[in-house]
Image (cartoon, rainbow, N blue to C red; front, side, top):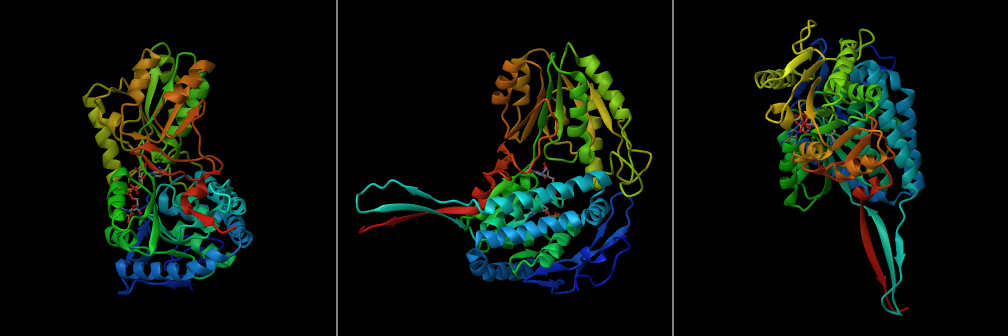
Length: 492
Ligand code: NAP
């Protein structure tokens, strides 16, 4: 039984919506019975509750993961691959329900939610395959009577903290390599979007994952749960996706027990349109990169730099494309843009737009709250943006595209790199030499050349500078969940 009361959302498999947390293979409530509500950002309707857990329950989840680790780490790569692949299959089998659940708690259009479930599943498939390739090494020795081996071993219990903007994929991206490597997991999803994570646990249980290998704790006191996850010596690694500020705090907290860390943090992505670009392709890329998920993605284009020779033409085309975006409740019909996650997010977008307008920006589209009310905001295009504006220096995390003007490659590279973060960057050009030069010069972990969509399980995702450390996905992704052990065999 994974839910005390059944919330109103219609699912063909209602058991996917769990209102309890998952610890040691049991579906449990908070010790004191406390709970918090989860609401639909499009309607404000309460979807249900989750246990409001604190440090004590988190410690027990860590104990469960710690107890499960020896047996799980000794399974063969093939056994782990089979289980992780089964979880992948179950995600796809329940894609429609999982997408409805996600749209209900997160607000994104249903088509985007379905896409996210497929994207989450792709990490499970990829790492199910990679599990079998967790090779070690032998090294030519330094003495005639010695041999050197390098083993790759799972790091141990991994704590995970994930954000609300991609409630399924951000967790799958961590769970998949962790389970494949032989680690056990205690995860805390964002309080606004816990049901997608709990549904993953429902499916993991059905896939046959042993008790304690995957544990999900929920609760609104993120500091208390995070304090236990980062302070408890049984946890050997923390993988966090979220804001840079919280990432820094968690990194400090991990220092006390010298945990390994992976940090996938915020960005401030430049999107550059050179004068030789295919402008129609650049507009498509800007729409995909800027307005997907209502502009609430870490790799969102945040600053659009357009060469002065094509500035007006690009602005006109982008304004026409922005005008076509359909805004609405993702469960009520076909839409391109849902609500912002909450009132605080709406206020930040309003603040950024007001600040930009006060400093000289012109509104070419949108620019205010949407007539639908709630946290809906109009898809917005601002012209004549400059470096003094708030939106040049912080993630807006909303559907606002500010267009900056530039006149040379050197100038735009200096502007693009003038930020302390470095996650994604994009540019459009038809000049091959420039494509190499600019890709190499951009200070970020991910570069899209003539494309606004870059995420895939087969490539390493992650940032440099204050955007974090570590990479998720790809052949490098297992490295973050394994330790190298050097074994020296003497007397040969
Ligand atoms: P956030 O405020 O940092 O929250 C992320 C997670 O951390 C949530 O689960 C939150 O719990 C938890 N948390 C907050 N304060 C904590 C604390 N003191 N100790 C322990 N846990 C704590 O970020 P967000 O606003 O949800 O997400 C947006 C940010 O994530 C953006 O900056 C975005 O760029 C970044 N992001 C990065 C990537 C990437 O891969 N680089 C991907 C997606 C998003 P509660 O929900 O309970 O508050």
